[in-house]
Length: 313
Image 1 (spheres, rainbow, N blue to C red):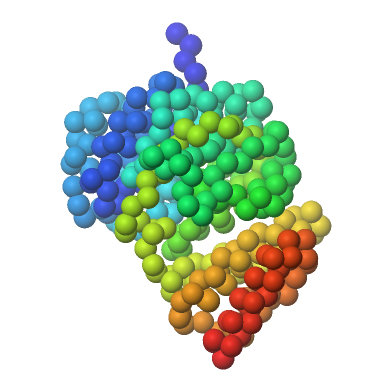
Image 2: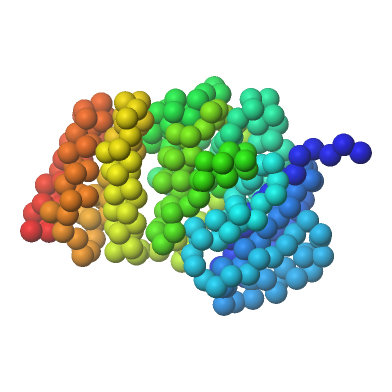
């Protein structure tokens, strides 16, 4: 019997005992059945694994336990353990519709893409407030896809996509550890390296908005430090890369992160030095991509820079 290629599904787990059963059930009930589900227990102190004990009788599921290291490290553990031809990341408090993997795989087969991105909605079928969830383009090079992605201010998330596993491993693509909102860094580097990126319109991923999750917890200091760390890594790449095309993309990427970092700095009081080399360098770098943004966006960004200069001096 000829089976379709194996798809690895990586599910990081930490303090989700109320939600994980619904998540795992949605995965094992996929119309695409040739899957391995790698559940990475990131030192969860609750009963997250215990509540899915019966589901673990499904031989497609396995648990890898590690001490708590954070979401990025848990995903990286999943990447290393994956044996499928394709790989998907699903957060353990979310769920997916039955056709989630099937629809992404179909597009990957048609286009031979390294990355296929789908759309997402919240549990009520709505686009979460403040998000740009849909990204629809013709199959493109990763560089062209990233240009469009950044132009449209699409939300940086990895969990509505399918990745070719050999592509990730051969390019040594993994998540930056010890930061929040690591999806933006990963997506930028992944798209730049991808031969082909494709998209589908179906919104088969359901994102749960809940109190206490990373994106809804006000942790301004860690957020600021995370933005700074990613921007610093992009600046290092920017300063050493000979390709004008990639340099321009990194300028746009740095601007995307600066737009958010400046928001954090304006709305909160954090330990921050505006004379830090990373911040001052980034301010200079984003002048070029900023010129291409709408007037209202340019004005808003410049006002934030002025507030930061006054607030942190």
